[in-house]
Amino acid sequence: MSRILKSVNEAIGNTPMVHLSRIAAQAGVEGNIFAKMEYLNPGFSKKDRVALQMIEEAEEAGLLKKGQAVVELTSGNTGTGLSIVCAVKGYHFIACMSKGNSTERARMMKALGAEVVLVDQAPGSVKGQVSGEDLARVEETAQRITRERGAFRADQFNLAATVNAHEQHTAKEMWEQASGNIDVFVDFLGSGSTFQGCASGLKKFRKDIRCYAVEPCAAAIYAGHCITDGAHKIQGGGYSMDLPLVDKTLIDGFIQVSDGEAIETARALARTEGVFAGFSSGANVCAALKLLGGIERGKNIVLTLNDSGLKYLSTDLYEDL
Ligand SMILES: Cc1ncc(COP(=O)(O)O)c(C=O)c1O
Image (cartoon, rainbow, N blue to C red):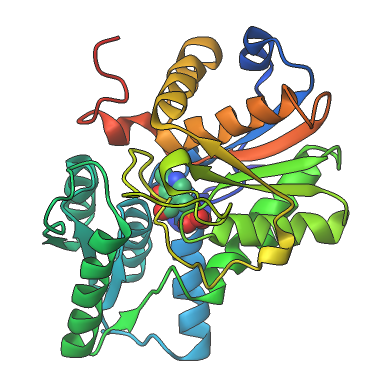
């Protein structure tokens, strides 16, 4: 039975899973896509799960104490999750973000009480396209502020808590909601915590579930492609860098998605399924459709719809429809 929650932190996770049958039918592919609606979390993204787990594990380990500030590098979603979790628990949160990310995110974090530090992009970088080099600049700033303020660094690219959030919760929910009818998992890599947590969690339930890493065509470093400039529009990932959280032996295959394909699929999701999501959700569903139209024909694919389309109203994702 539902109950009154003590805070919004308790509303994180346990997202609904939806059968995306309309978009699969429209694409003329055989098989099923089961999607976790992560944009229904309080911060409108899957990163709320990671934020809550990082803070609670740090509290339990005595690494985060009352009155201490929390710092993180963010493309916006982890920062929004941390803003929420810290607001509820009474920690001061400092978000370090590239100016290349959409402005909605910075505004939302500020509204939630966070201090937002915006970092200039590298020379030649394009607004809306955050490169690995841009991210390295934000990392430098995050490290400096952590030192200066004696803060706790909620390090989403390195802390095991981020993987635990998806292994202990997202993967378990997927398995239960799909009644174990899962053949394939696809995921667009950012920090890799969703991939790592869900792939390891799902393979514990059934070891032959195949897990595909999704990357932008322009930044398919894990697939071993040569990177020219690495620029792309799929915010939240595709950073062309090594990901310490990812165990490469869990990757059974690679799929590349172009900016245009991610955008077209996100738009099709809105029109056909009533799902208003961001670029990377479009990338995940596009990858699943490619697999159902090819080597995974007829199979059941699970994935996450990572964040809300509302976070991209200042971009070209839903412009000029
Ligand atoms: C919108 C969006 N999609 C995908 C990702 C990548 O997820 P992960 O870091 O778990 O690989 C992120 C990460 O910030 C994100 O914000």
